[in-house]
Amino acid sequence: MVSTCFHTSLAVAAECLANTSPVVIPASLTAVIAFSGLLVAGLTLRANYVLSRSKNSLDFEKNLEECLDYTESSDALFSFKKQSQSDIQALKSLARDDSIDQDAYDSAIYILNWWERGANGIRCGVYRDDVLYKVYCSHLINLGDYLSPFVTERRNATENKYIFRQFKWLYR
Image 1: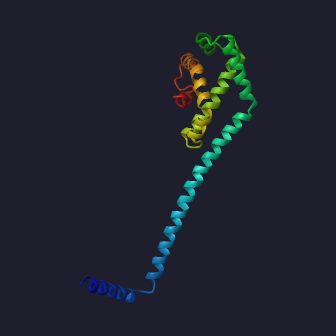
Image 2: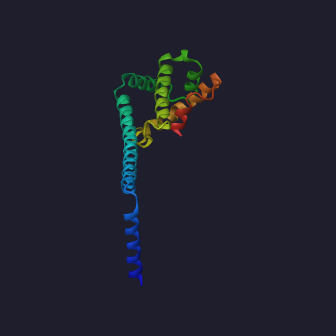
Image 3: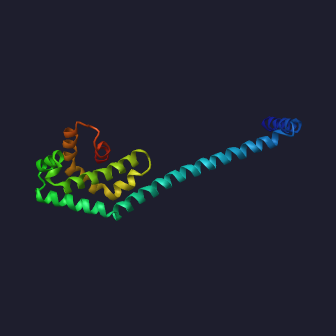
């Protein structure tokens, strides 16, 4: 009974196919090929997106490593930290009055701006956070621990709660 129904179904399908317009088969094939092309294009675009984010992250890392200004700023900030014996009040005073140590103030701002740019890149999907966190996690934690009072004091002094907001998000 089942095989009779099956053969009957095949016969009906073959007869239906023979009676259809000669346009149906090529149109069906075209639709299948077009859908396959869209699928391949979508997968390729997704792969390119991931690859470009990885490349951008590596470029950010390379630029940071090769940037002499960043290295000099880190050295100046470390020197201020050492001179003030990591005193948080000295850092807060520096945030309110840049004339205390202009070089340390400029260095702190430069470093914070650099990481603010990195945080914006991560939030906008330009950089991969996992790549940057693997390389700079402890560096960011140390910077965040040390510079958080500076950022808070800058916000209070300027009455602008948005100063270095992205850096604080990155430090989280």
